[in-house]
Image (cartoon, rainbow, N blue to C red; front, side, top):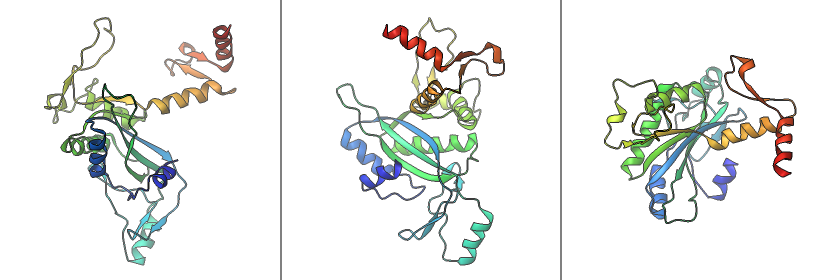
Length: 257
């Protein structure tokens, strides 16, 4: 799907390149300022390819510099260096993709198309600190181009959840980096009837789990005849709520009756 998007759009994308200048043009054409950023990885077939245009090899995990992937890292004219890479570095098992979704204005009736910001191979060894620094890099690069990222969305892998907690101040903090004191922070006013909902009032960014990713997981579990969807504390199996396919069928019968 990603390769089809690139081909149909006639895009020229280099691995690990962040297309901030093209993003700026995209937002100017839409006359918009606010955006959601998303990051997720998808499994790929492990293989190495040679890109004759950039004279580099693609398919190795991209090294990170303060969380940001190093562009054109696997570039060499030495056969010995290439042999060393093949013998000492495993092939990338995942493709990490960054997308930017413009937020439509109140006067617009159509949802703007999303923008492919970057893509690169990874091996899932990035830490929460790497992710924080990468998000901070994307946030600032966009801000310099008058694009305000207000939300980052991703899945619920442990390193992403920790990065979200630290940035959002959810029972965690960054003592050397008080993000809630940034000049771009906004105030979140919670409903008084939500006493159980904890969220620091001053926020620089909000964080969502990828809704499409989450809904797909739920759908697959609900439609499976062998897998049960359980809600609740997984460590206390008896306290979880089991939602099986038969229950869903009965609910649908009641709704359609």
